[in-house]
Image 1: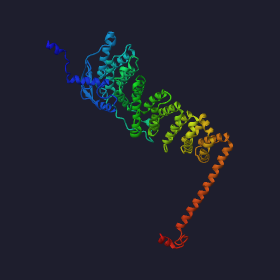
Image 2: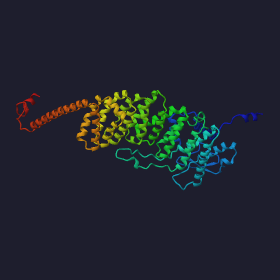
Image 3: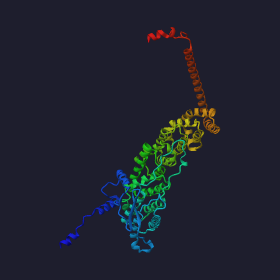
Image 4: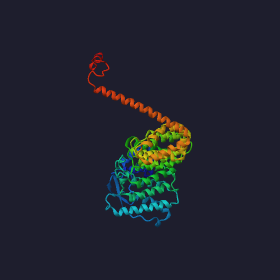
Length: 513
């Protein structure tokens, strides 16, 4: 009787059981540690360099073999049947076994190693893709846990190629550098495909899956955006966008985490390979913002997006950045003044190619700008445009003059021509007289004609005012030149001659001093 009672009491788990339970808790995101902590994600990153099998249980049918790059290698010793060869009731159990089999990590730096095992894993991953795609029943919690565990083991790896330093400096053509391709991509691509289809599947219950695709998981996924392999970044972009759409509870956290990546990039490193992809995701997110815009979204524009114009490597992601900025202005036209003043703050001084990009973005912003917002910033804006029109780099000058080819912008200028023409007329006159490029001079004459035809009387006043100021400047310059000439003559004259004190060498003035 006593033995029967004692037999019903729960046994104290051993050390192996403890480690497995802890691993399951971390994978589920419901352990004792807060899963949304950035420090936790970092500690998990360092934990990727595994030297044993304490992080995850050994998959059934697989035995630990060796350690490569800090991760346990598993080799299959028991072939698993195909899904078509088992009963429907056994398919989910077989799926879990196949997922566990794919937790094996192999050394792809040596293409001659583990050829048979690699092929078995590749074929198994392909079967998983088909199973997830054709699933016709809700995925169980066990399946969700095992998939996220397998994805974590394969993707959150310590063997990522070390990113090269960002070479986006002036004088270096970025497109000449070939990106580093991950040799393990033949397997990684299918792992990404499995996970993408799992996240996108209607059979994945977001309320259950959020326990495993938690804040810690998302942070580690975002860390992968710094990969040099563009194929990996493209998958990550699609997957993160799907996660954002499916897991509404994670949306604020994802936006905040992307913000932090931008802050670190702008103010610390200026080195990151995935800024363009992250901005592409944000472009879709911003497009879906409800009106009126929340204050946090406006702060994101001011604190993160506009400062992204500062780094030297802005050309790597400018197209996506410009789209995000324009989306904000189209959503709320009152933000045009903020955006334009932000562009002026980071306007390039010596980088001509960057200035051409800024002028192109400026045109897109102005196209979505209404009259009231335009009037708030038009004076500092057209002072800068006038400087760009006089640039010795013909592409910069051309791009500035092309603004008049846009009907909306031309209309805004015409409605405020009495303020703007006096600002830009001197630049027009200098181009007509002195610019070395014939195309720039022709465009300048076209702009002059637009103003002259619109109000010839006021245009004549501006011409007269410019001529008067030019005469005054010539008089000032001649007086200055005469004064310098007189000082030079005094400096070279003999001692005692033309001395204002009337004494040789100014001795009395020295004594008085």
